[in-house]
Image 1 (cartoon, rainbow, N blue to C red):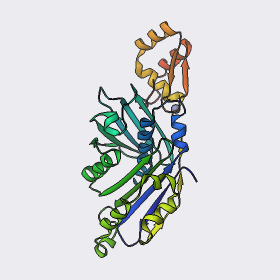
Image 2: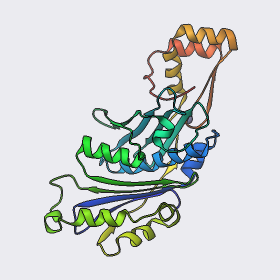
Image 3: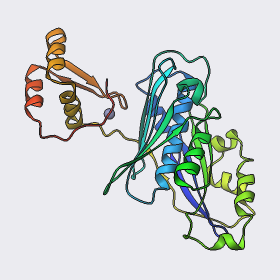
Image 4: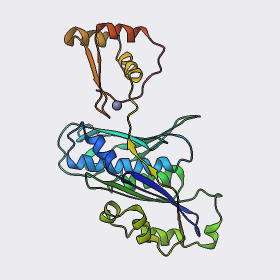
Length: 294
Ligand SMILES: [Zn+2]
């Protein structure tokens, strides 16, 4: 199975893990864009991170990772979303060819927002400053400071394949093994740190887990598959159109004869002529959109 993630548990320690490997998702996300290699790598790492973080939520809902780049940075927006059904989508808005790769080199010293939209209940958001050392360190910082859950993350992407490994302490009170094995966190962390990007991207997930943890008792759960899936729809796009305001829409109509909005995630083109626009603006009952289009 190419695009999949797996949850695993350490029987003798209060630790859990996720491993993810993606290829087609990244290819589909890049299909309608000519991303430079450094941006593909960042996008791939963000997909891997979002898929694993979504899996740790323990509830249905969407998890988004969003970075708004600094004004002068090559990347102005990185947005990746993971759904409970394994669907992933993401996009990068960039204004010039980057000189070098890496989160801070591409985005500047901005912030990363982690947003969780549960199927039921309140949406919540955490924000963390970008770490020079990359996306994995940035997210480790988020788990440490905002969630108080010690977490180790390894993310890798070569532009075509993306992979991720996450090791996390179980939330306090949810296990009892730690008291019997106080060294587990350090030992497992040490083992996890020996993983190379090449192994994470080249070996299958069972081989990675065996290579790292063959001396531990690891329970591997059923794999989940991932695919690129966009949530755009005419209803959501209509909401964006309404969000532009009548004045701007009228102006575009006068100049162009139609209003065209392209979904930044999947490249789908939504076109509205004067009749369509009148209908959309008259129908204010649809829910507001929070998507990204240009
Ligand atoms: Zn779309």
